[in-house]
Image (cartoon, rainbow, N blue to C red; front, side):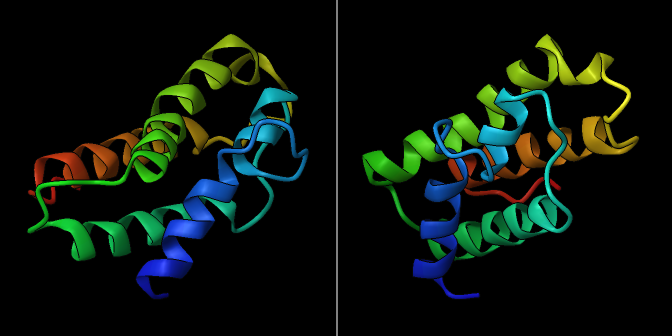
Length: 111
């Protein structure tokens, strides 16, 4: 995955109005589709590698990073965690996503 593909994937997956995106599914109290979390984590790793020496991150990407970690956790905590459809590792996956986003902002890989 290259930088532009990873960037577009992260931005697209934070669209709450689309029912098949990562955040869209969490908004509906549905689990992510198979492979969605893996794709998000891979995109975050690509972003880290591309941005680790940068001092500026564009606003659209920064917003997506914020949403993919903070809003995903909020949506999970507000409903999906109590759902019978919740995958058993989703809570840990959201933790990995948050650590990867923190790594991007800090410039030091922590995951």
